[in-house]
Image (cartoon, rainbow, N blue to C red):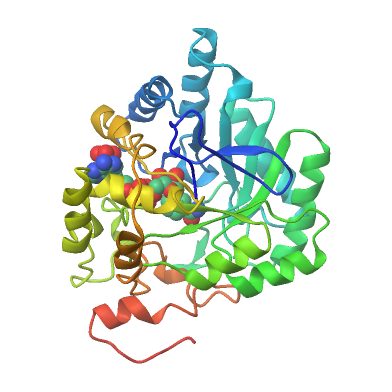
Length: 341
Ligand SMILES: NC(=O)c1ccc[n+]([C@@H]2O[C@H](COP(=O)([O-])OP(=O)(O)OC[C@H]3O[C@@H](n4cnc5c(N)ncnc54)[C@H](OP(=O)(O)O)[C@@H]3O)[C@@H](O)[C@H]2O)c1
């Protein structure tokens, strides 16, 4: 269990001995131009040192500018920051991994990143700079095996420009396969986690195999884009859940703080996104209270295997990772058959 401490002191040790701050700032979907720069500046002042981005988010250049400015102004040192970015799926051919990585590093204007993740086990074909390459409206899947991509990820570490490598959106069997061949085991698996998607088996597996988890979409991504909505009956609003709200009242905290505390108390890193100065600060105040056993039990009992982050068009990909818990959102829509299992 994480000790009571402050955002600046709270970190988890990775399997290679490096420290990763438990609370980071997510940066997906900062819609207003300049908002991510403002968010980074506010967050650094508030004590955030861990920043999560990705080639996919198209904001690495803005983030790089913001970080450079903060370092130049003496607000923070590079070595105190923990910068995470991700290889996009169109760069999964081993010969393209360095190309994808160089694009990110250059945009970020950094000499190294602290953690580089494969964004998913699923590769897409490379067609120039297309993020979602398509033919006749169909996404162009690639059969590149994530194990081969991983080998190229490992060689980035020896170049010194990546301190740690990891994965994102991998399920247990994909992790097992990777671990059986990896020279460098993944330090992190970044996955969707919250009380509606507790993933206790994955959490246990990762702990047993010294893979640190980072929880994304801790609030259920209330601002997710339309492609992530599953029809008019996609009703899940974690922040409004009555059980979470009752626990928040009991501790005189906000529901958001309960959702973040839920992870840091289990030594799971968490990366809430906010572009609001008030909420960026609110989200740091999660290191000075404890959820008791009853609270944790009540939160875990909300599990319904509901995911906010599934791209519908990817579900026929051979390496689609969510088959085991895929049924749940369909159950929300009244479609109860267990498909894809
Ligand atoms: N690896 C992956 O595949 C993957 C997938 C999804 C996300 N991620 C990463 O995880 C990060 C977080 O996930 P997410 O962006 O999907 O969603 P999220 O963090 O669950 O939710 C972000 C939303 O919650 C709002 N919010 C923030 N703090 C709040 C608070 N204290 N009270 C109420 N509302 C609050 C934000 O609005 P304001 O901005 O207006 O505050 C924003 O609309 C991403 O930004 C990204 O870095 C990774």
